[in-house]
Length: 354
Image (cartoon, rainbow, N blue to C red; front, side, top):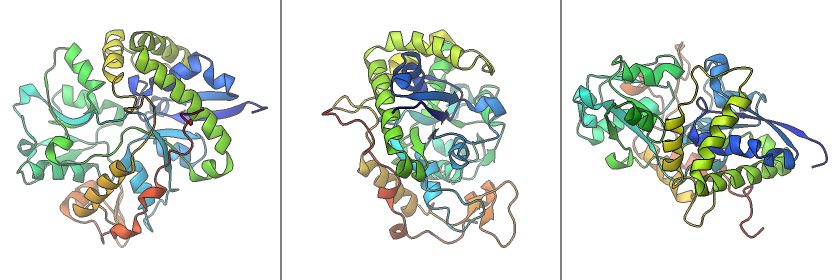
């Protein structure tokens, strides 16, 4: 590219090892070499008032990091208020699942069925509460629990303080932080309880960006893939580089609390085996993983017309999180209406032969 292109990347959480490739690519100058001036936007800058997907939707960022549910939701929003562009996943940051619903071991809640009657600290997403509900039911519970919505960036602390009984975390980040603090967790992996969870986190963009600026997307993905592949091969060096790069990137808006070097080092070592597929490539997504998760959402009755709202309005396709879990979900979205192939593409990732 003959001119430098401004690129924003909206993170799904404050900087952590899931995001290492973005910081490493910038620190090593690989984005600059590709003609990209990349800004990494952490949600702490506005205390998560804007979601990562909304930053892509409004054009303030070219890319964002989200779970696959955000993409599926965008493609099945239908006529509900607050229509969203049909975002497209262009890479997966991790090849396999490293997240789980967790409880404090000290709580005595050692299996999902014991969450009946308890409080789950929620991120307030459309499918989240009902996925947890199904997780509980798959273990023999009724799925009757309270879904609280603390401030987004305080959810983990809510669990640690005993103000909630469970929440959903990345074992490679919060799980390692808990271990380092001597806090024992009980972790309920979704696959363990017959939930074929999709890719998370993903790198996502607007479909118009793919149409109008494919060369920019390819350049960004090429540098990012190079960085993640380097991090997988050099976890110790990657940890030190991430610690340094995060401070440099966010000098104007420092993190609420600095990264813990010991957590970063152990986490980077843990994730080094999760970044790449069996052929040593970063970002590639398997159609079967996408289809399996969407099929499960459909078969479990979670693909429905109504969407969550803090202020649901009668006569609209909105309801509360409690309403969704109680069955106020509207009509089911026919599975044949959901085009999984439109939700993701591997076509912009680097060609392994190149």
